[in-house]
Image (cartoon, rainbow, N blue to C red; front, side, top):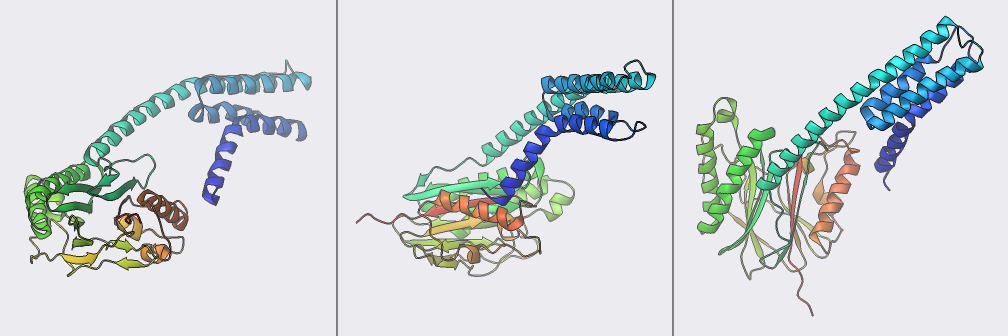
Length: 365
């Protein structure tokens, strides 16, 4: 178990014990301090802490326990009918009673938030379905990690498709967040799937995506119509050939992880502007061909990986971190990368991260 997971477990255990701990602290404070001091605030805090964090039953039990504890304390101290003792007991009982509606409000809000999360997750899965584990003889794995655990929707995208021209794929990042970004993601992926089946070259697929985003830009108003863009890498793996062709539109370069642990950065033929920025400059796309031998794994990712920083502001370097390591399954590679990024950032990711890995299995014998 990693240090971050150990810290999270310790925090969870502390939170679970906090209401009981407050009651114990209140008792000790009242007994061990001069008579002018009272532990009533600690007793009152117990049901208030339980209300947003625990179930209704636990909240009620915390309130009963706190009220009973302060009542018995005053009885044992011999001031059961003293006006101050009665006031303190009534205060704790009142707070315990108020904790119940607080708990219900928090529960209802939580249920609404959970419903919103389910809708967001459903939208994300509809736009980014998990690819099959095997496509065109290649083993496939994909992963989408949101920067926030409660957020599912973002602008990162991936798609893999077996076409008459080979296995074609895209990994990209749409500027922006929320439903607007998901809408743009849907436009890019929809255009990609159609173009991948129809266009004879990867360059032509990129041109179709450029046109689709241009149409989307004219439909939108305001800032998105001016500044909307998508960084992307398009790739094509022809059937029966141990090569991969790539077109890079302003996106982090893919990596080729060879069977011997060597990591190759797949630099583009030429650096180009992201998709959707054709009004600023335009030149023909040029696909570059790279070797994709048996036992090698192609890794594509978004800048949530390459721009992840540690406490000192040092960027995560996937080529350097993966050098010398070998993986027999693409899913294991993605799990290892995700865990390594989490360790590098200390669990403080600030951007979504999409990962796509394709492995060419080695022939038996």
